[in-house]
Length: 275
Ligand SMILES: NC(=O)c1ccc[n+]([C@@H]2O[C@H](COP(=O)([O-])OP(=O)(O)OC[C@H]3O[C@@H](n4cnc5c(N)ncnc54)[C@H](OP(=O)(O)O)[C@@H]3O)[C@@H](O)[C@H]2O)c1
Image (cartoon, rainbow, N blue to C red; front, side, top):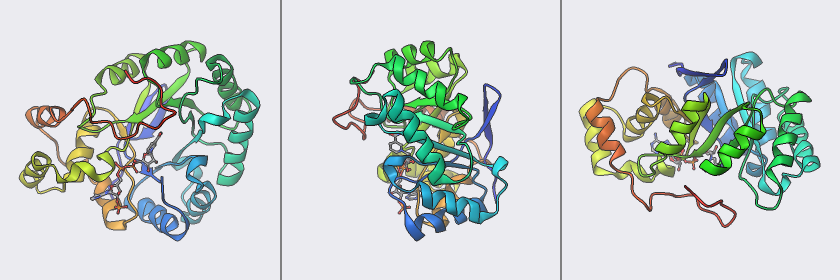
């Protein structure tokens, strides 16, 4: 077992490698959660949109892990951002998970249809009502993040966004750092698409590591939190075993150089204008 290192932000400790659970459900998810707990994961990412909160919560309870020892994030879908809908969504998530308040509640995507003032106030209210210990946002580009930070009284813990070597997010990461917020990378290995890259493979061979481990180490070394998803116990264990080697500055730079203007994978019709 290889415990992940933690990032400390605003007095909260977040394990730097968490298990993504999008598209996992049923026995596959339950087995993944047990494999993850065994491998040392103490951070799990879900959302009502993934329709797997009940299974995730049951699997976590079944591991016997102490509730205080792991960190769970859920979200509120972008159609549920009015005050009443947001509070209803958060309450339903807590009920489905059945593990008490979530550690982090995020706005999954911003919406142009509901004013941000109302949404952020409701998010703060969800925290006051004890549904979430911490609050944050996801898929917020710089101008929206700036507004959300101010509206929340500077209390946002994290911005969860797509990030991997093909997508430059340096401005957003810098802004989170200056604010003392965590930047959480989703699709950290490019939904698997980066694993064939010849340069990533060359670095992997030189370290005797897998391509996924090289990319996840690149995240960890930047002080990023990453939430790779796998359904396979062996890969789940491999993805967290990234604390016992280091990439050189030159290797970090070669990975950064893979960024390209068309590197973004997630760009649905409801996405905001990106930076
Ligand atoms: N906030 C948002 O809007 C948002 C959007 C997207 C995702 N997310 C979150 O971020 C998580 C991660 O993103 P993601 O699931 O899109 O992509 P990802 O973690 O970058 O990649 C997952 C893919 O890589 C494969 N894989 C994982 N580890 C591997 C390894 N060691 N070797 C080879 N292949 C490996 C998996 O297949 P196998 O299962 O077959 O191993 C899967 O196909 C999601 O699950 C979700 O929790 C959030």
